[in-house]
Image 1 (cartoon, one colour):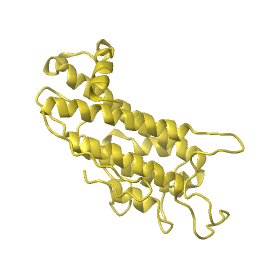
Image 2 (cartoon, rainbow, N blue to C red; image 1 turned 180 degrees about the horizontal axis):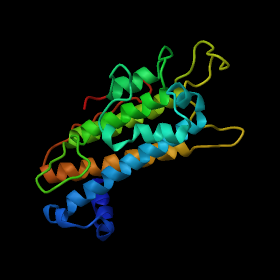
Image 3 (cartoon, one colour; image 1 turned 45 degrees about the horizontal axis):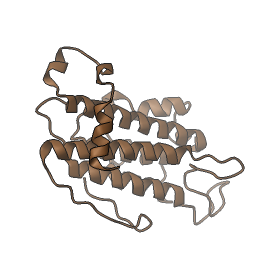
Length: 228
């Protein structure tokens, strides 16, 4: 989507539906849009975690949780905002990669989603709400969007090279999309939604700050994660 098209779409967003209160007087329309997109990004991540835990129940069991709902609630507990779920303290794309390594002994879903979550926390400068004097770095948000694309590809294509328990070699490390016996592309759609939110907000941030974003064209199959 071109920048002018994205901005035109945002102009018709129902800003009146955003939470109102005294703090709203310190916000511009762009800040309210940033608030909305930050909430949607977090909601999208939460949906991904729920989907992954449902398809990979062995992972929430590794974390010692009673069920997948408890595991998701732990990942997105407000008091843990910006904190890594990894016992070793890995975060960001390093944690995503660790969770998709065959040798990773802990909850892979927590590693994958927690890695994305901490990466996005950093891309949004550690903020969940925005005010008039807050500026976002469009390059970080652009890089974050591309990193989500890379993470989605790795999730879909990383497989066991050796059997693990009852899982034979060639089995995905984490089950996500499936084409048979019943087609399920809900993960692909959720990743697309998440990337779309990020692509809109980096364009908004670039216009607000008058910064130029360096765009990177990569082959997703061999792409390296971009710095945040």
